[in-house]
Amino acid sequence: MNRSGICQVALLFTFLAASGSPLAAQKAKEIALYDFCQSPCAYEPFGALTLDSVGNLYGAAGAGAGGEAGAIYELTPSAAGWNYSVLYSFQGAPDGQEPTGSLVFDGDGNLYGTTSRGGTNGEGTIFELSPSEGGEWTETVLYSFGGYASDGTLPQAGVLFDGAGNLYGTTYGGGISSVPCPSYGCGTVFELSPLAGGPWTESILYMFQAGSDGYAPESVLTMDGGGNLYGTTLVGGGPGCRNGSSYLGCGTVFELSGSGGGWAETVLYAFQGKRDGAGPLAGVILDSSGNLYGTAEFGGVSGLKPCSGGGSGGCGAVFELSQIGGEWSESVIHSFRGYENGGEDGINPTSSLTTDPSGSLYGTTMRGGCCQSNGGYGTAFRLTKAGDGKWTEQRYPFSTRAEGYYPLAGLVLDSDGNAYGTTTSGGGESGNGVIFEITPPN
Image: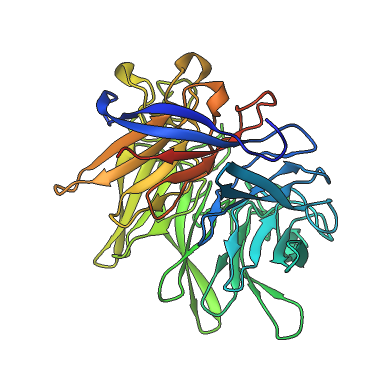
């Protein structure tokens, strides 16, 4: 495929029900819109795509593209196919390196995101990309993290806007450094506020303590109508999921509430590493009733026992948190089962969820689905709630290396219900992944 990024490989996937039986009357079509090529092209698309109002797709690639430090790219539909272009190539320090999170637009069409490394101190950045009338995009580093005790370091996820134009996010490290956190700290939640005619100002809202509050957040945040923030920590929170004699904890879902000029953290749920799940890598989303939904990479019906697809830790789960009488309760709405009983369910969901107007949930699993001998190529899934309150899974398994495999990030939906996402491997000769579209059955 040429560098313009036009790819028109049409692939059919059988639309599967939760039982794993194909529904012959229903076919979903997957199209590989773009194959990531070898250096100096951009590759390692770990973050979810962003869709603008006219159907263009935007994403971050953690490596390659000129400066070899990653890039921000755009995919534009045309009559001839899809056209791929790099909007900005990172050079390392001081503009940033390894953009791996999702992107967000402001009202003026500027894009915002994070790099996990680079910047003035090498600890990561928050950046803005602004378009010009000539079609060029200009990058501005809004903030370079300082790291360790006084600041965050290694932001892994994107940022969130509030109604006043402030940005919020998490850093995997930085802040308090105490056992069992790594030497680079337990992680933070931050706010970045614009000053009229001046620089942006960062405030650390919370530093994780490595105890029951959790630590190592890798998730993007969600905000409710009252300005409260919700997110996850990958580990911490309780006595489960030990690594030998070391305390880790299975992860948490937390809330940050601002009051009296300060912010307080509340752990809404600490995972136990059983059927309830473990290791929530992605963030959570809110529905209109105030319920939270997310994925746990491990745990599920098999707990932390070996998954039927291989590997310890369980196959993973999709969970719901609901508030009843002021108390939060967790329920698993789907446990992934891998190849149990001859099925081809997904394994290890690492993606955030997205929802459609009917309340169905969409996401991906890194492994499972087709091709058990290779550990599975991964799936895209939809969970639909029936009138009796039970959730039914339907899935799209990736089935060949040419189609792409190992989807780590979540999906984005357009107004017609088409889903877009990325895989980190497979595709063309380089095997550096694809951007795909899945069209639902008619």
